Image (cartoon, rainbow, N blue to C red):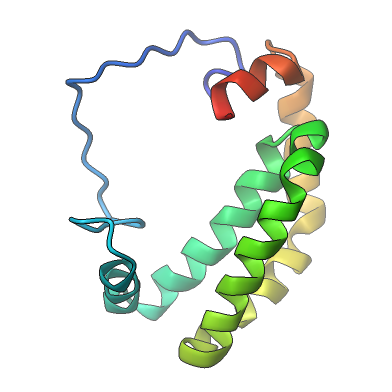
Length: 128
């Protein structure tokens, strides 16, 4: 988002960041470890992880990029929905929360787009 608003963003390979809640924490990147890390999180945090993925897309992703990667998003989201349906049914209400907050997120998107300092193609080069 900082880049969208015109801030200069630099890649610093030696930089280290601390992710306070570890939304994507794994040591090895192994899929089994990823599932285990997700399941260790408190139920409310798991719901927020699901919701925030959608909020980031709604607020920040240019429509042209969204349409370009839509097939990948559909496959990925179908897999996640299957997993949640089988192993984490307590997080299913997150999908309703996203629908309830869609108008608010769309309003935030319009506000962000009004302050955008880079084009959609400029955004693409940072993402893809």
